[in-house]
Length: 304
Image 1 (cartoon, rainbow, N blue to C red):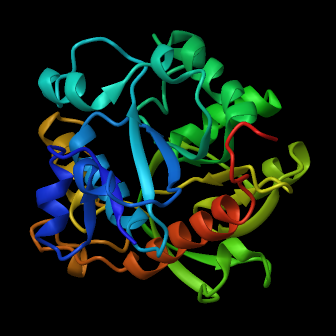
Image 2: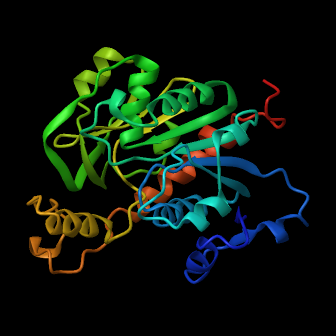
């Protein structure tokens, strides 16, 4: 089954050119199917790029998914046209009385910013608390993991001395959790963060199930026992060239970034990188939708 998205969202053309089946709202109106309702709080600067990345992964499932987009920062965006935001994004006030099967909260370039200094931090707190009663299962990506650990476990921010950037090997730590069903024992994930997630810190201060980790990158994949929160500290949604774009952006800004580890062929930033994590990313999102959303969500949302 396809992803259902607004008729004019750029992802319609982008993913259609990749032979990914997306269904516009107009066509979906003629189907008598209870779709999975999913909302994405997109905190990334390049919102259209992130939309395409996430919708691409969410499309790899037999479920029909109805996607909404949420923003909580009403300031003018430097990277996304105002027309796009006004056309496709909803405010929290517009959706706060709704119920959803799933939610994704993305990362944000806020790893070195104290929580209290973030302009919209109060709203982030409100949304994370809201998910506990209004969303069946929420996936937190990268910086959103740090935010959720603060809000739900009152854990202080852990920061690395040097930014973690590259494609790192990870290992599964358990064998039979549905979220990692079909994973290889070792797999690759892009990482791009200043946040630190030591395995001991997670094990000693939360009751989360640690499902996968990396010796270099720390805890990667965690879940609550009721499957209602999933924590993903990396960026499995990244395209092949996203890390390269970040590297050159920082280089042009005079930040002297390190070359992302295990990413460019022969560690040459002029060489074209290849995606080595796509299969794992598709499996992660498909498993989440199937086992952590579809299998436990009520037929009538809000009826729990």
